[in-house]
Amino acid sequence: MSQRYFVTGTDTEIGKTTIAAGLLHAARMRGLSTAAVKPIAAGCTRTADGLRNDDALTLQAECEPPLDYDVLNPVALEPAIAPHIAAVEAGMLLTARQLANACQHVFERNADLTLVEGAGGWRVPLNDQQTLADLAIELGEPVILVVGLRLGCINHALLTAEAIAADGLRLAGWVANQVDPHMDRQQPNLDTLKRCMPAPLLGVVPRLPSLTAAQVAEHLQLDALLKATNGLSR
Image (cartoon, rainbow, N blue to C red):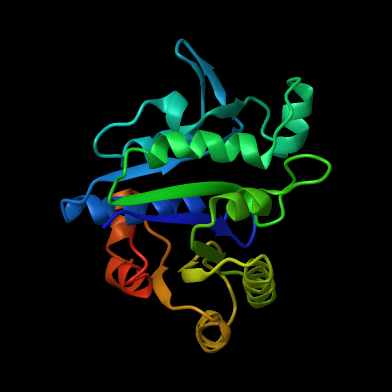
């Protein structure tokens, strides 16, 4: 099988990690091996083991066989700010090639399902010339887009889908995540997205009382993702 995807979102704080963990959990429940990479994580906490990021730890919990934290999250930054700014403050220079090389260490595990989670949206800067899109281009993997359901999501989703296509990558599917429980006319907005998005809908995740990977997995359609990439497996 061995399928890999790059997970991005329409914005920051719209549930990329939540959805990625749910997909990994769904795969694990099928007996598939799983792996994940969070190449850059800002907003890390100092621990006895070093800087640790909650999102990266969430992904690590869904990796089977287990994956060392430093391999899963090679660049950990303490301030909860834009990664390129945090990197400069830490005296680091981020490049797409550097991060792609770090991802390859995880790819070498040849897990049945591997997810690379970006930071923020598609055009988050890495340095003065490159963005996270350049990392996705370096990797060349199909993309999963997490759409946060809130006012403005149609514009954000369609623009991101257009940018992914313009960068020469394939949108394998998208997930609607209800980030605003009070969103007006949610269903008509969702219906519009279904008509306009150039890729299959992989699930609609509602607001959940307990946001666990197992609960999220119940609302995701892993078959739709695997079918969308049928024939492209490595």
